[in-house]
Image (cartoon, rainbow, N blue to C red; front, side):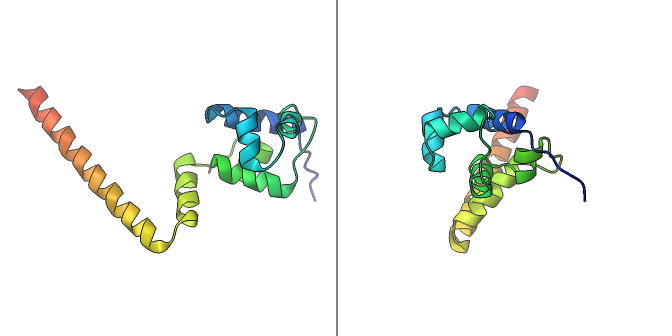
Length: 123
């Protein structure tokens, strides 16, 4: 079995970057994770390693995989797909069907808008 060494500083830096990407303060982000801002600061600085439950919560909240969070780049991590999966898991089937119909309607409308703009630009 291979020994896997977790680098707390790199893990903390990834978490900090994910927080910055969402324009959240440490206080807000910590509240969303049900931890104290001082504990989040220790995690982000690499002085503490979160337990598995907290890592899962961070991954779900930031729409990344655990692999990315713990090990770094994950070539299979598609943020859009992760967001869709999170939303799909959060709502019942009927709500998701309605949301998908609304999304299809919106996409069709924007496609028509693009056609109109193309026709205007050709003239």
